[in-house]
Image (cartoon, rainbow, N blue to C red; front, side, top):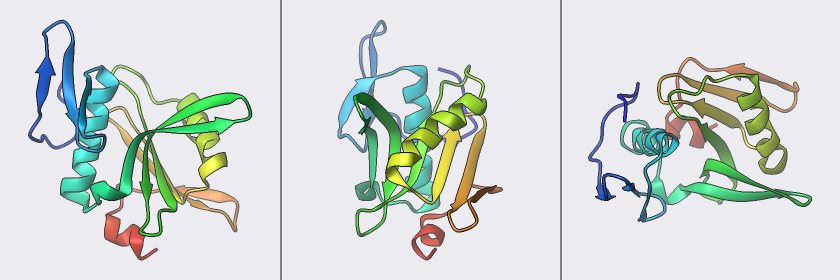
Length: 152
């Protein structure tokens, strides 16, 4: 796996060289180590260890449904009342972040109606805050701390 633009963490691996697995701190189990999962685990640890997010208020691979269509949000952050506040979408480092990625996360937000959307491929990270009253969004310079989101 390639080095990402995220802090390192204590990585727990298992499996074989042909089928490596990485421990997911949110799902409490080992999962297949894909390039996207490599980004997810780095980003989740970054949020917990550097931004003050609570693991108990985050979930990976959240199932969503729009009619007959089944979707899966990569990660969701909840507030203390278990209302969704942020959706995170991850791509492998080799995948360019395009308008299509933002359209994908926006579709998830039609269901969850969160205040923050985050997209990362491990090298580039984008975070925007949604202003529902003005029907607009603003890209932020950095991923906000949990404290700033909780007080928002």
